[in-house]
Length: 323
Ligand SMILES: C[S@@+](CC[C@H](N)C(=O)[O-])C[C@H]1O[C@@H](n2cnc3c(N)ncnc32)[C@H](O)[C@@H]1O
Image (tube, rainbow, N blue to C red):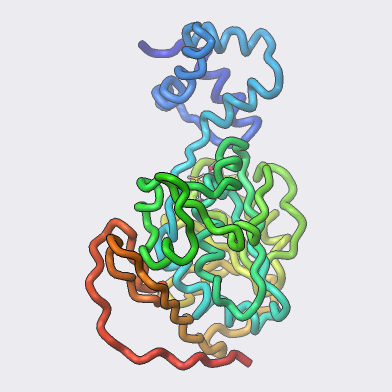
């Protein structure tokens, strides 16, 4: 069965107006697979369901359709480098630029919470308090993120065993992020088409969401993000994303294998002038039945499901202050 052209046109227009997500012709299968369960619940065909929406529907029904069309794919420490670089490389740059009392991060488009929780876990031993504001358009994923509870299958996606043991507690067959860490993340609904949440932020994680927008929207979102960044702060994009050809107001900065984007107007200390610090060593006792702890340095992040090779014995790095 294929949906009627006017069904697709209505949904694509609704989704574009409310979220800026573009559904190009050829994405009919996506509309069909995401909205068929909603239509089935109401015991009508998808075309009939959309006909009723067009005749007039309450706002929350329309919002539900838009939410169903969002793609919420995510994982822990996604692409590793942006998280592994935080404490040893990015934090010294932020401190040199003036972040001396605390670090504020905005995880825009946070989906079910893996990204903001990965940030607080990666910065768990930072010498400054860390606050994360995590936002998404989709209320359903935000509710899951606030709960902070994940299935075994979900924790298998990118979470090293040592991090699991340190920062989660078991709840039946699930794992829940410990309360102290949950307390460092504030979840709020926010549409990237609207003004940004009140800044300033030292870092904005804007990962794997611009890909859904057209060029003018990408540019407008990056403009809004640049305005809430503290001077010397960075935007962190997804591994396949870039500001090149999208917005010429950013420069690319590499820090410990992570690619960061810094607004050009900000005062910028040269990256080479700022020393990196060794990442803190985290030693946690491993319960029986779990694979051996992955090496503590987050650059060696290994997913929970992957068999870990024993780390070679090495002395603890001395922690160095950053002046
Ligand atoms: C693919 S997920 C990315 C999650 C996470 N940033 C990561 O990289 O793993 C994209 C998220 O963007 C959200 N999203 C899509 N359009 C949005 C908009 N206009 N405003 C805010 N969030 C939006 C979706 O709800 C979804 O959770």
